[in-house]
Length: 81
Image (cartoon, rainbow, N blue to C red; front, side, top):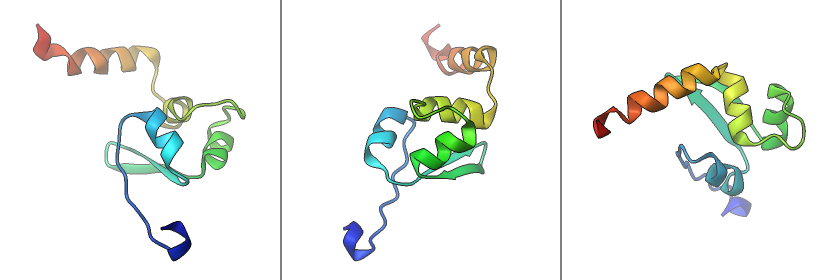
């Protein structure tokens, strides 16, 4: 499909899948496009080094702290209580 110029839009929160399937990636948070490019371009932008994962890129790009991530995760699981 790529050779024919076809674009497939794929949206997922599973970073490992996105990293393996996509040649170009866009990072969107709170409705804003904050970064886009290849993994190499995103790693350079986020300064993660060559071994940085998309998860690393995302966290650096959106500027989330560990506390914010934990709070958001707990809020998302509140239905279990």
